[in-house]
Image 1: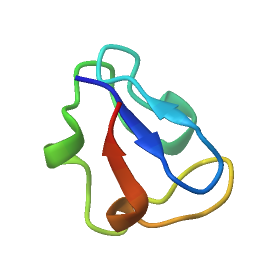
Image 2: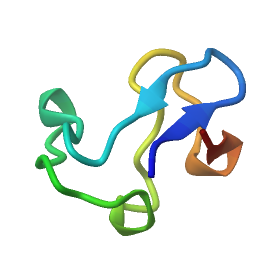
Image 3: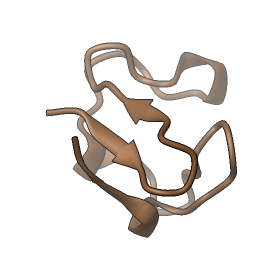
Length: 51
């Protein structure tokens, strides 16, 4: 399931991960570190909702 940032509309796709920030492809949203933030706007995980 993809997740979307409610501030900037960035889509987190678990299949792609966030390699530029050390998140391997295949990492589910629930498994992201608590201090992971949106790579576009810096919002915390609490600002994301299922897409």
